Length: 223
Image 1 (tube, rainbow, N blue to C red):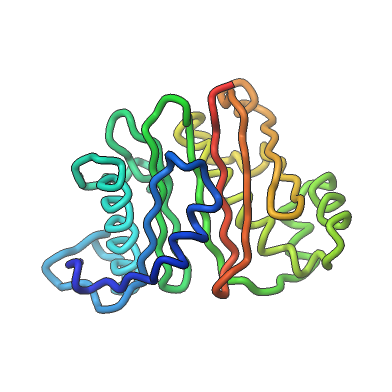
Image 2 (tube, rainbow, N blue to C red):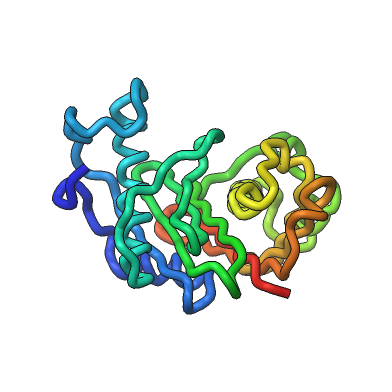
């Protein structure tokens, strides 16, 4: 996908994304526009829509690397489809309904990053109960808005947290070992099972609702 085939979504989107992270985390937002050129396959036999989504996410990742003062090298895929960042860099990528975002930071003080964007829409209570622990549901009830109104937020926060932990644990089943407790604009993170011994540091989670999306970001800092 060429630079001309992507549309910058504007500084307001960058500001929303940046508000979720520490100042030394680089952010990039793009929106898919044109079809992926046929001579630039990104995911083998994937659909054209998935090809565009993948390529736009990788373009975001390269822009985040440039913002860190690094070369915009290709971001490979791991065995589980996760992005493989250059040595000394931590990062995360997300996309939803054409919006693509990426964040990156120099490894060191920042041990891990997770980002997620989801369409901002109500989900059912049954959906929330399927993905949540009782402690997570109780935290949502204390927030005031209905569980249906917060279900997309908790889903996105857990997705971001899953992305944060995976490079450290390689645990494909980590959803069952996560606890995300929502508060206004923030969320706390707990790890259980194998993740508890492999993820050390202080996790800071933040979320926003803007431009028709739920935006969530979580940063793992050194203790």
